[in-house]
Structures are given as structure tokens and as C-alpha cells.
Amino acid sequence: MNSKIFATEYYIPATKITNKDLSECFPEWNPDKISSKTGIFERGICAIDEFASDLAINAAKSLFNKHNIKLEEIDFLLYCTQSPDYFLPTTSCIIHSELSLPNNCGALDFNLGCSGFVYGLSLANGLIKSGSAKKVLLITSETYSKYIHVNDKSNRTIFGDGASATLICETLEEGILNFVFGTDGKGAQNLIVKTGGLKYKNPTFNVLYNEGEFIRSDDHLFMNGQEIFKFTTEEVPLIVNNCLIKNGVFISDIDLFIFHQANKYMLDYIKRKISIPDEKFFVFLEKTGNTVSSTIPIAINEAIKMGKLKRGMKLMLVGFGVGYSSSAIILNF
Image 1 (cartoon, rainbow, N blue to C red):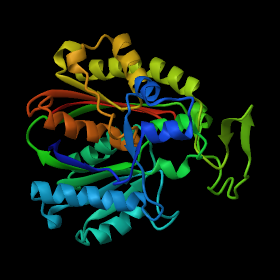
Image 2 (image 1 turned 120 degrees about the vertical axis):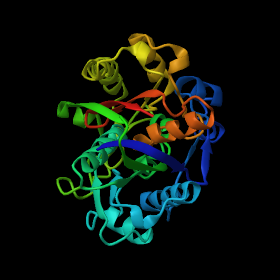
Image 3 (image 1 turned 180 degrees about the horizontal axis):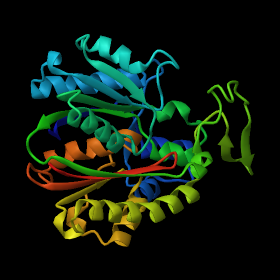
Image 4 (image 1 turned 180 degrees about the vertical axis):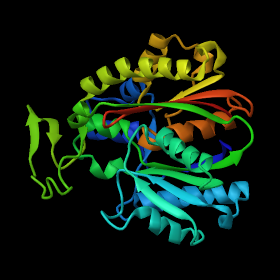
């Protein structure tokens, strides 16, 4: 038995932070400068009492309502997040209860960032191919804004909060094809929230500034932009090529490419390096920002709305980022 994506929806918090809002906090960055560098004009930001599980539940309800999905038919819930409600219990169990999924439905969390959606597809595909499930609900949800220091203008311009919900179903057709994965833990320190876990449980309250410019805080999200860019521009072309080889196809055979929506500058650089035609490369982050594991399913949803992605098309998805972690898949949509 094979698997395919049946439908996907997403949810963005109601509160929006625009480039004008950010330029008022950081006058040296005007709105046009922010949008030209990132491709982002606004991003959704959670309220103080709003959490990743809330976004996840809203995304799932949107999926159920818009596509007439029967709750009792869901065999497994996979939940990808790096901002869980608690260390334990798993947030997927809480979401399972809030959605009133059946008691014979499995549920688990997995902690992965920008490659999380593609990894989640691989887990769903494995469950279906093994006969353990027929319909898998894959939810991604992230609230990185809660990790970002108020004076960190770089990360505040890039990241937004959001969630997606995707139903993967069994099929006799050739849907989801062969995956490739990559991991390089030597880069773990280049995108990290250092304190809060059991290794460094207590906050350090150390905030580094240089001539008034925010540098980093161990209690907040730290991203070494130069090293992340270097990793991405070196690794993504390799994993794309490996995925093409593993699936026995060429770039010309792919109808649409959707990569993790990191930022416009990085995506444009990768597109040129791999020689992907503009018309086959889909980008959507101007109204959402970088929503980490949710960027790919959000882009899928918008590509469908715009008529860029249709049933029967051959689609390549590529995730990359925190970890370092990367993944790619080709599927018949």
C-alpha cells in the first residue's frame, strides 16, 4: 500500500507584526529594507496566553471542516513542535483529547524544526506502508516568537508563529515516493535555545551587547546566520541531487519545487545555484514569515489556491535547518 497527501490547511495567529511595527522598534531598518532582505511583510505572533497546541488545534479543525474529514477514521496523530506545552505529557495526547479523536488512535510528538514536515511525511508513509494506519494526521506547530529576545531585530524580522494540519491517506496510486535525509549535529550550537532543558535548566540572564547592538542571550533563540547560510547553500543542492537520483528523475521532470521558506534571499540563492526555473519554484512567506516546520505545508496550501499546484503534478519538497537537519521527497500530488 502507498500513501498520498489528501489535504492540508494552516492557521496563523490573529496578531500581526508588520515591517512598519519593527521599524518603529529599530529605526535603522526601514520597512522596505526588511522586505527586500527577507521577502516578509508581516508575521503572525501568538498572544501571551496562546501556545503552539492552540494553533495546532485550530489548524486541525480547519482541515476537518473544510474537507469533511471524519474524526473516527484517524488512525494516528503525529505532532511536530519545538515549543511543547510541557516536558511531559506529550502535547499530542492533549491535542488528541481536544480534537476528540478515537481512543484507538496513536499519538506522538517529535521534536524537529525546519525539516520537520518532510520527516513527518516519512513517518506517516511508514505507518501506512506497514499496515499500522490508513489515515494519519500530521500537525506542525511552532511559536518561536516566545523564544526571541525583544531586542533581537534579526530574528524578529524573520520568524512568525503558525501551524499546519495535513491528512495523509493510503492509496493504490504512486503517491509519496523515496525520501533522503541528512544530519550534521556539529552545527547544533548555531541555532539553539540553550537554557530551559535539563542540561541547562536555569536561566542565565546573560544578554550580550556590542556598542548597543544586541548579540545574543542563552535564554533566548540564537541563530548564527552566516553559518546557517553556509550549511544551507552547501547541503541543499546535494540533498536535492541525491533525491533526484534516488527517484530516477531529473529537474526537468519536476513540476513544482517547494523548499522550507527560510527567507527570500536564501531561497533565491539556492534556486540559482541548483538552476531551478523561476516558474517551477514556489515561494510564499510574505504574510507569514518563517514558521519553521509549517512553512512547506503553508506553501503547498497557497500554491493550490493560486493554481500553481494541481493533482497529478510531480512535486519536490525540501526541508533544512536547525539540528543541522535536512530532508527531501518527491511525490505525485
